[in-house]
Image (tube, rainbow, N blue to C red; front, side, top):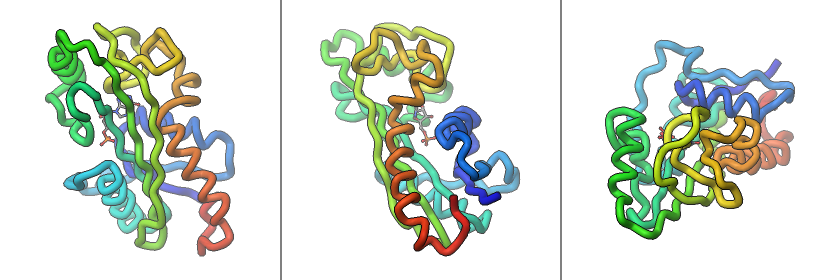
Length: 200
Ligand code: IMP
């Protein structure tokens, strides 16, 4: 069976990608399967640069096709923060949410979007990148137990509940990651014949 590596050690993301791939004839591995993989410095200036850095590093290290996502939350009233610094906005998940809610205290505009860029690397080269977004607003307080990261405070447009209150299958239909992934899959299916390996 062909396999592809997703350049992340985040078990939640691996689960989301595994669900998105579904029962296609491909095995998804992640950096959790490569415990000696060195820490990657995400020093890019954009989601696209960071996704490319991670996909390339995994492709070279594991010597198989790899993809990576870089994602984050952009809040309008905070000029796009935390953006590419979403994972580093504060030391722990609850502290990140607390800091975000404090920063929005008293602000009327709570519009936000999750963004995800997926980069695909094959044969030591990034061949393309794909962006997905989901728009919504920041809740007044955290709600729900599911998902990860900022999910308890993100209410996607068209819903009254947060991402953390939605069943995983529902989030996977509309999320920024699902949308970027769908574009990446379309590309892979189109390009299958020119990729010189058994990628998908
Ligand atoms: P990355 O692993 O460098 O892409 O960091 C992304 C960070 O953005 C995560 O650590 C989360 O804080 C946040 N994030 C990205 N996607 C999601 C999501 O689907 N739900 C909640 N938070 C997310």
